[in-house]
Image (cartoon, rainbow over all chains, first blue to last red; front, top):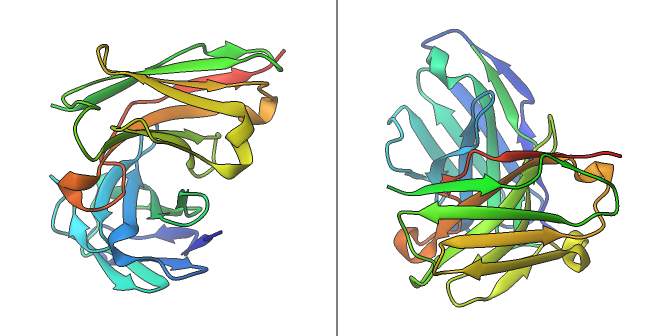
Length: 108
Length: 123
């Protein structure tokens, strides 16, 4: 079973600051199969990054993804008030077939 | 425009069977590489993937719930149905359906989600 760990649990920032969110896997994750989601309060998760580094359709370029192997990072270059929410990483290919990390809460 | 919408009961009693329907538009589950998954999220917790049905009718389930889950599709109605037997209060969660377009993106992720339906299991 691939377990995803995210840090920090909570990130408190001011508008314009840089946010760095970490996702660590207990086993190797194929780069193609690592994604990031944003969940705003009261909403469904929204796909931000797929294939570890590719922005999904309509996602602003202040969001970027990097990493490989077991360590992945989501960076928000300059946070805006609308970026408040919980950010989850997700992998495919282990057991269970898909799993999500516990999330990082971003406060602004 | 791709949309998905979940429907089902808001309240279910313990030991009963839960049936949820996902009605979608903007894509076809007969297209190669398309799949629809069910994902649930207990209040205040991370999402948990439950099941997936593919365009070729292949089905996959999370191991811990495999004996309680079934998934089916009706391509003429653009619907996917999830059934969960013998529900328990720990199954209280918001249940989402979500699309994966593997041949479109080359990755296995969920690019479109429904708004979710909150299901409470209580007597």
